[in-house]
Amino acid sequence: MLADYAVRVENSRGRRHPEPPHPYRNDFQRDRDRVVHARAFRRLEAKTQVFTRRYSDHFRNRLTHTIEVAQISRTIAAQLGLNTDLAEALALVHDLGHPPFGHSGEKALDTAMRQHGFSFDHNLHALKHSHDYTAGQHPELDEYVLDQRPPLEAQLIDLTDEIAYNTADLDDGYEARLLTVEQIADGVDLFKRHFRLAKNKYPHVAEKLVFNEALKSILDGFVGDLITNTTQRVKAAGAHSLDDVRRHKERLAAFSPSVEEERRGLKDFLYENLYYSPALAGEKEDAERITGELFAHWMEEPDDLPRNYREKSAQEPLPRVICDYIAGMTDPFIYQQYEKYTICVIIPRNFIRPCRV
Image (cartoon, rainbow, N blue to C red; front, side):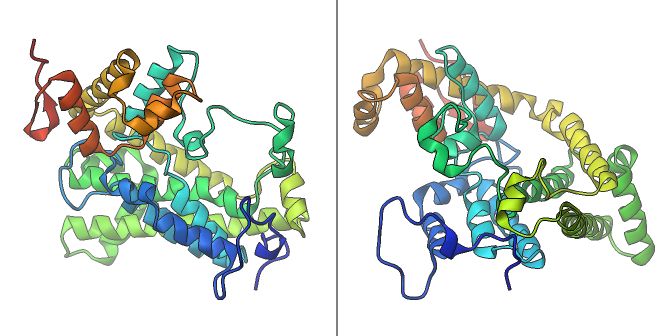
């Protein structure tokens, strides 16, 4: 049963393009299913999550990360009495705007766009927006109530995204042998505590299995705290309707202060020891160079763009058209385009030879 403050599909604003109702699926379920069947969703399978070259077939890519976010989101939404169909649809769509090469690609696209007076953010790109909108700046968007808080189903996604990638990236970093148990325990008290408990429970099993148990316990702790603390915050705010949630002075979905501090500590550790690891520096530099050089090439030679993108440039600024094109690419496809248009050779393990003259 839905809570009083949940989003109800029958109260939605309906379809921008009217269509007959489906005999056995509501509109949020149809949205979810359309995401799953979309080309942009399938392309996530070949987009980087953390590693720009795959150390192992077991590591996350952008698609598997999205599936993990959806699973966590649906579980929490159900416990909070929220609309699980909407929460799942939002989770599945949350990374559709991500370019190839993960955040390295995003950084390179933003840098290229700023040279032409624009910017790039993968969250906004998913909505085909080039900047933050407010109802005051754009009265035609007033119906979307952008100056209010999002419903709880949407508030959850930022947090479940963090739960998913903080724990998964720790797992992949350990599996890649870029992180050790000792290093993580020294830098993250949260992990140290859970690893010790797992070791005491299973004293004679392999380190990797103890690591897995610790990670599962950390993930479960984040999820449980988010459910408990959000429930308490909703009650304390006296939120009894969707309007109460949207008009509240701050977001109601949140971790407790102590767990929020642990989350920040884990995230800081990952940035310092994994995301900016010297072992990945060369890959990030290659990713930024490939993205930047291709962008510059199409700015100079727009006739090399596919026909449909050339046609778009008649209605939209060329930098935006090029940005949209690159942002939709997979890692393998952008490598192909780089070879084709820069006359460079990409050799095994994704290192780039200098361009031939």
